[in-house]
Amino acid sequence: MDFAESANVIFDKTIKLYHVTDDVDAKVASPYAEGSFENALFTKCWIDTVQWHLEDIIRDPEIDPVEALALKRRIDRSNQERTDLVEEIDSFFHTLYDGVEVRSDATINTESPAWAIDRLSILALKIYHMREQVERTEATPEHHAACQAKLEVLLEQRADLITAIDQLLADYTTGRKYMKVYRQMKMYNDPSTNPVLYGKR
Image (cartoon, rainbow, N blue to C red; front, side, top):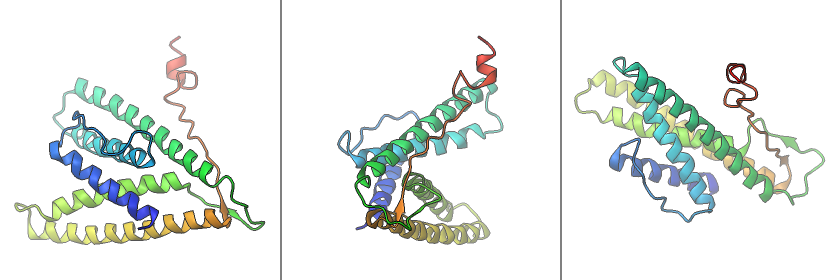
């Protein structure tokens, strides 16, 4: 099994594990060894899965405004954790391919491996929840048909993305591509760069 397919298996298992409780506050131990790459992928997908459901909750039109603000700030923290973890995964790949002799005609990819893996995790969530819509017994046939069509597109996207990730990693291995780790440098979370925050000092 190639890397991207192995990552997708971890994502699917993580999403199913979350739905055992279907609780954004549930504390679940990782089934993977601490410090392992598999554990990083599990943690990444767990963050994505919890945030998916937080985004559902905050869209309740009857939500209490105070609760909504608390959820928005929790989502912001989750986004930062997600970004930090993606950069950590990219650092792993950068170290892994550091010794590869880069060809003179090597090119850089528009997207790093970890950000492609980030999209794969989100696609796993979309597929899981679109399949839920297809299987809703109380929904109309029109709803089932529309969601089935969307599910088929998502499954095709996942297959293409898995292929593209593995091709990218193969290109790194052979020196046809080289990678850099760019930091997101989100300014709104930094009290020294967000004018609303540093203006209150």
